[in-house]
Amino acid sequence: MADTKLSAGDRAPAFTLVDQDGTKVKLTGFKGRKVLVFFYPKADTSGCTTQACGLRDVADRIGDTQILGISPDEPAKQKRWDDKHGLGYPLLSDPEHVVADKYGVWGEKKLYGRAYMGIVRSAFLIDEQGKIANAWYKISPKDTPTKLLAALDG
Image (cartoon, rainbow, N blue to C red):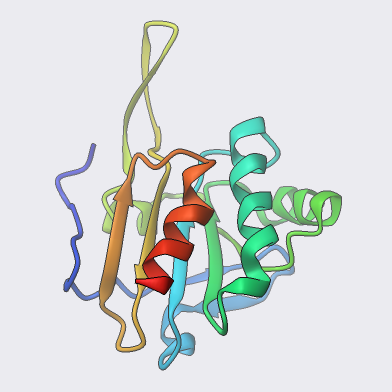
């Protein structure tokens, strides 16, 4: 895993990425609102779909908190995934994993004994001032919505 590990109180690294509709989305555009940024390995895979649909299903319980998903997938793939599951929030494309590096979520993974580099599923709740309120590295897909709700209730 990358050396960069963010924790509560750190300034959230700024970014501008393109969403599934080709629109540029800036983190700074949500100043004054809480933002959940979650990093997922690959659109339309089972774990990522569980995570993304879980967040979609709690969206009506998080007030004006904005959800942003980020993966290395191209916008067209994310658009098909969004259309298929009606996710309803921006899915951002980070093909060069520049933002993933800034958040410390691009790292070594293992599958069937083979090591490779990829997204380590993680989520970050960013407060209204642009600071990390919660950082969940290696979060499970099912835990993402429940941890978000608990943090917002806390």
